[in-house]
Every structure is written in structure tokens, then in C-alpha cells.
Amino acid sequence: MLYNERMKKFGISKQKIKNCVTKPHFQVFVASFSICLLLFFIVSKQSGSNIPPRIQDAFDPIISTQNPVNKNIKPISSVNGIFSSMFSNTKEHILPVKNGDSIASILSNLGVPYNEILDVSKSINPIFKLSDLRPDNDKIVVKVKPLGEENGKAKVQLSYLEIVKSPIYRIISTRTDDGFKTVESKSNINSELVRGEGVIEKGASLTQIAIQNGIPYNVIDKFYEIFSFDVDFERDIYPGDKFQIMYEQLYSDNGDYLGSGNVLFASLYLNSRRTEFRLFRYENDKGVVGYYDEDGKGASKTLKKTPINGARISSKYGNRKHPILGYSKAHKGVDFAAPTGTPIPAAGSGKVVYRGWINGYGNYIKVRHNGTYSTAYAHLSRFKPEVKVGSQVKQGQIIGYVGSTGLSTGPHLHYEIIKDGIQVNPLSVKLPSIQNLSGEEVKNFASVRDKINIQFTVLDKNFSQFANLIDIKSIDADMLK
Image 1 (cartoon, rainbow, N blue to C red):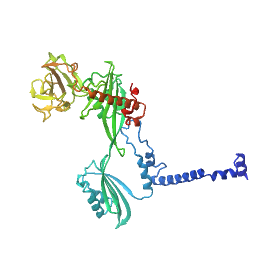
Image 2 (cartoon, rainbow, N blue to C red):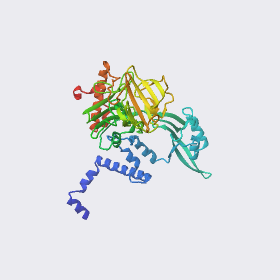
Image 3 (cartoon, helix red, strand yellow):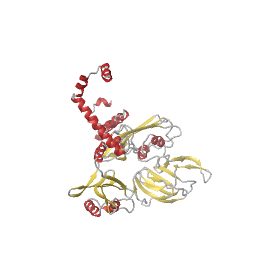
Image 4 (cartoon, one colour):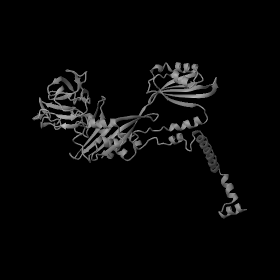
């Protein structure tokens, strides 16, 4: 009676309840809710926690708008494993390959019978030589089904074997009714565009600020490289200077992070010069890649002003008191302080015309680049063995290593640029570009440049999942103004 009186108080009658319960959508809701409760109970029992981690992973975003330098994208297929593991007693083992390991020893330690080890090995051998396993690199994934014990030892049945050679290449062998079947699995490499930027703070270097903002080391190195023809990163960078960069991050089809890819765009604003450098990556029809400003003028010059990126200038070009001789003498180069053994790259492409000892200079190399320019490198600890007189070297190729030979008070590189036979100041000399675009290539570059500009803008609006999908041909020209 008390229950009926309370129901009447809220205006609820038995007839209303009956009408609600008999409606199809209510019955579907009750059935769905019951199934969800049952599945949740089963999964929770298996995981030993209130929220199964595999379910949690399944709901991680497929494409993140954040910079996922150290985070893998979780594939949505991880949900599939929940249900397969609910009703199976198959156990999975993920094992790194160590020195002395073989497929036979790994499987034997798990209790796999010898005849199954032999069968799966025969299936794999035509595709992959089992002797080619690499310790500390490869990984083995094994799935076995426990079959109880025999003579006091665990007995299992091998159902699956996977040799993981890399995030994009693996060999998979699966048990079938006709024996083990082995296939190669080669993943595609997928890219996601990432935008990074920063402002130089007092007491910090560009490298430090970039790392704080999650930009990988190899991307920072590329940033230094493409601006090294116009910027001395030791002298030209001051607090308040700004940089921006857009680069690729690479993933396998499984969502494994593979590292960073190409730098597509980079900008650097220098307050001291009131100048902004903006460079775009462009690959021509012949596969030649270069970086160009907005007008298609190449960033690469005949020579680099600072051959060792980020090295501190310990002595400038001009008259100075010699630290050993004790009297004033013209210093016809720039000294870059660096630890002994630091690699020295050629500042430009050319021919080695001298390699040997010169009093005062110590170990010395001279490279002639054309009829006008040569460069010289002194005080080396040693030469690159294959670089000899007459060798043709490319810009960036290592020719020797920093040392302190000759008249030197500590390890450093003495670097000279020689123009028409006379040493000039490497930091102030104006050098010609060697990769300016012309003709039809200017139009092709303009299309690539416009696309990159839009992609960079889209990333700023946190729409990173759309940046890769942009097709310049489908964009209204007015959007580019």
C-alpha cells in the first residue's frame, strides 16, 4: 500500500509502467545494458582491475593534435584482441632475442614439442634464414595453448610465431589445419605533420629551447644545416629571436613511432638584423632536394661560413696578439673551439689540393672549390684516411678531425676562406647561391610553397589530422592571398 501511495504521489500508474516496458526501444535498451554489464564483468575479472587497460588503449585518439615525439599512436584494432582473449586460454610471450638465442631454444624453453619446432622452422626457412636473428634488435612473439602436464613438464601447443625484425617488417607463422603457414608482413610508412616553434630566452641556446618544445635532435640538426650558409648560430642568435619549423613524424601501419622525417619548412627571425629567413623544401623532377626562399632562391651557397655547426668562435679574423708568439699578427681565418676528435665537414664541394703538415698550422687541408674560392682547415688531430690530394669531396663530407697540432693552445679548427688567392673574413664574405630555380621549376616550386604555407597554418589551428590531406589543386586561389 505504501508503495502504491508513493507512486500515485509522483503521478506514476501501473498502466504507465506497463506501457513503457512493452515499448521496443526500452527492451532494446535493457538488453544492451545487460550485455555491457556482463562483458565488463568478464573483462574486469581477467584484467584484475576496474578498467581493463586494453579497453583504455582502444579509446586513445587515433590522431593527436599534440606533438607525439615519444608516444605511439594506438591502432583501433586493439579492441579486437579483447574479445579473442576473453574466451581463449592461449598465452602470449614477447621475448627479446639475446646472444646465443635461437628459435629452437626459445620455443623449447616455453615447452613447445620438438616436432612442432621442426615444422615451424621448415615453414619459415624459405622466407627467412633463422640463423639471421639479430641479438638486441629482433623480438619474438609466441602464442601457445597450455595442454596440461606430461611427465611433470608443462605441455603446450604452438599456435603463432612472429619474428619482429623492425616496426615495419616481420615474419609471421600461424598454425592451420594443413600445418604452419608463414608470410612476410611489410608495413607502410605513414607520416604526420608536426609544427614546432620557440623564442630564444636569455641564457639559453636555440638547441635548448627547441628540445624544451619537443623537437627531435635530428630535426634541430637539419635546421642548423639549412641556415648555416647565412647564419652564425654562435654570434647571430640573441634573446627574443624566434624560430618555427614544420616536419614529418613517421609511423608504421601498426602505429609504431619510427622517428622524424623531412623538414618541410623552417623560419628564423633575427632581431639584430630585423630579418626573417623562410625556407621551403622542394624536390625537382630529377629527385634533387633543396631548400629555397619564397622567391625560389637557393639556401645553399658555394661555401659554408661556419663548417662546424654550433661551435664557439674562440678567435675572429683580423689583427690580434698571437697567444704563443706574443706579438701582434694578422689572423687570417676564424677559430672554432671544439673537442678533440670533432668531425670537420668540407665547407663546399671541390678537390683536395693539399694534405699534410705546415709549420704553425700543424695538420692542414686545402680544398679548391672553383676558380675563385678555396678553403683551408688547420690544427687537425688527424685526416680522414680516404681523403687525399686529388680526392673530390662533397659539401658536408668529413675530411678530418679537430685537434691542437702546430702552434695551438688548445683543440680548435682554424678555418679560412680564400678568394682569388687572398684570405677573406669567412663571417662577412658574400657568397653566391648555387641552386636558384628558373623557368618552369619556379611555377612548380610556387605550388609546393603555397601548399606548405597552408599546411603550416592548419597546424596552428590544431587541425593536424587534415594537414596531410591538403591538395593544392583543390584550393581556391583567393585563399592563398
